[in-house]
Image (tube, rainbow, N blue to C red):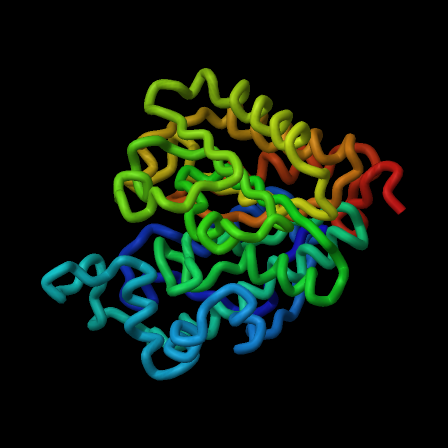
Length: 330
């Protein structure tokens, strides 16, 4: 099932945040794959107790309280060291940052919903989510909370699953997910990302290894698919197969991505589609439930990455928007 939240989500610029993360990419994707192939689902905002499954109490209390403005600005890196604003102009904001907090806590429910749908249907794709930089102690890197770990732990708490893998192919390392799960053997993490770029250029963020990290250097794009295939094979050899896999399907390795910090990895449109097909096929032949989330992808062209993959999925035999059951899955 391909689904999106039925709640309205505004652009970041509507809150005064000058970052080219456009909600238009979802509209563009839907235009390409057809609105009839996308289900709108009403999502409930994450509760305090659910947030505490991944985050510490001090952060959660501040985030759901009046201190949320501080965390929203920190999340989107809008404050310089001297306290001045960076790519933030409150004068053009149409809505308060507390509204953005509420929208994001609602969207963050999407991973938990996606896991439920994947367990039922074999496969789900959430048009949203993938907040992999948020750590137990706070928001970071455009990610207010870690919806990935929260979603997995909600499923574990309900006894729907015992273990999960997170395969993160965003341009940036899933450092928050790695930090949260470093002592949790029930969640296996793999991240293939840019080397020598955010967050790996910050010494303080190197203390959180994933179970498997693959750092791609600029100019190594021709090796990307080979390294991804080797990584998936390594996971299968070293760890038990999961009940569900969450795929953090960032579009920002795409060569037409517009965020400056993604310049360290520039894959072609064809390579991006081959990446996504490889991941799907790896888990499909092993009959592993999978849920995909969007994560990073910035600017006017990144919608093509998702639209290409979703159209490919929709044209595969036995798949439709309402029932993406894997062959042989009960």
